[in-house]
Image 1 (cartoon, helix red, strand yellow):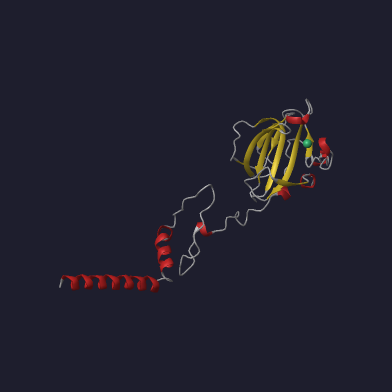
Image 2 (cartoon, rainbow, N blue to C red):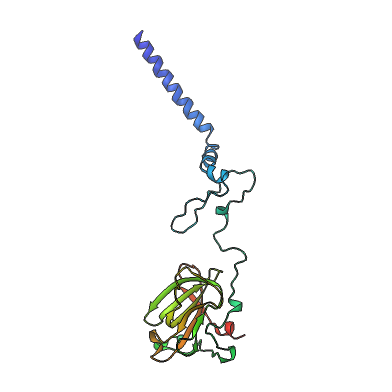
Length: 230
Ligand SMILES: [Zn+2]
């Protein structure tokens, strides 16, 4: 009798395992959606919900989330800049106060040491002349280098155009990285730092196009002269 009872138990156990397997197999298509619905619950319930961000990169929400209608989910937006954030490089200010457009000289292709081309424009001005932001844009890097001396890298709202200001005497008081400088805002002062040559006061200014805005140093230069000389 005891043997028979144990065998029955084993049979029942086996049957329930098979039933479970069949149940899971039947749900195989629905399950991911159900899980996704559970995972996306906070976003669906709370319009202000912002998922955690890692390393500055927006978290990509799985596209499998089944929603009957499009929801205004900020995370689902493309990581590119907003549609109206176009390059303002077509309307640049001359970056040195008091310099007129007819005073500019195109030194973009002038040769420099080591067979390099200049790839920039030099704007001559007295020591300490205010240097202004050519357009609105974020100060992405304050950098001191051997050739450039005291320099500023500014990123256009288009997220691809970098403006570079070099040989500064000093930065404007309180200037800091991540500051959003306004067009015409004083950001520094003309100097002769770096390889400018002692007493050769001028602003070395260049414009470059980067493919990754986080790699502010890694751009392809374009001639700033026609952009400033208008
Ligand atoms: Zn230069």
